[in-house]
Image 1: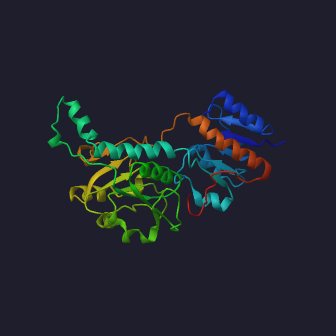
Image 2: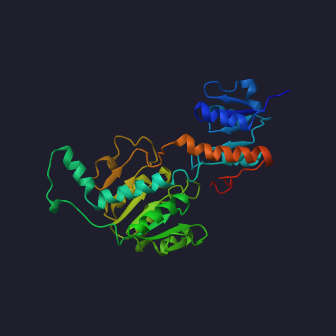
Image 3: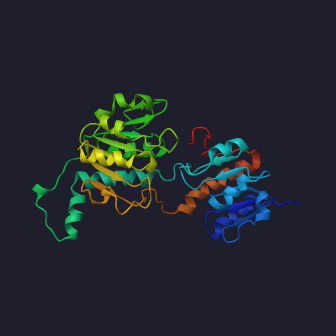
Length: 321
């Protein structure tokens, strides 16, 4: 009898692995320490996490039994969604587990800029006591923010920012109004409103439509001197365009956690710009990661085994999110 196999790519401790074994006793489990062999690839039905090498080969099989991939990230742009759709493979992501850390990272970047903390950190490195006349300072309270990508992360950020006295608008494809936002605009109407906002935050997923969404045309529509934060996907931003916008003072501050090329090249002028804050793709780091992904693993595995459907975070393979 052919084995049904679950390939557990994500590292989990023994306790969590045992929970999954109990949920799916009729499946053979493999891990990255003992991955499926070439002859076993056709029997992999579920991948919890994604192995780019073996996964690509399994997808290419004419008689693959792969039916569901549970990604360990919110973004899934690194997967071949066209092939998944053609083969009828279910895909789910980790949308939601990064909401609090990413929202707090955005607020941290903004407060570091508005309250002079970024300048003070730089001065501390050279033992300088900066007079207040040399520190740019302002209040976050009273500012207007637009969050482009009003999903779970955007809603969490809107809740925190609103509590700090920020007027927050959101942007999504439909313009459907959401909690915590003063208003929500349709993405197609964004340019009509963009010059109202002091702060622009990108949390869009990466799709064909959002690649280089933030380009020269976009930055020409923002309020002169606006702040721009990117905690979405690096390739959503045209790096050359954002450098031009900074040099032309169309943007007064940029906080970047993600980049088109990672690590950011040592030759990039972004490193040396005083009005740029760079973090090395850490905004989404989550404490107790295994515990949080297990909540989604368990719910989806239980649903899949009972009904062949997923309970949480199924990705639309056409839209990409």
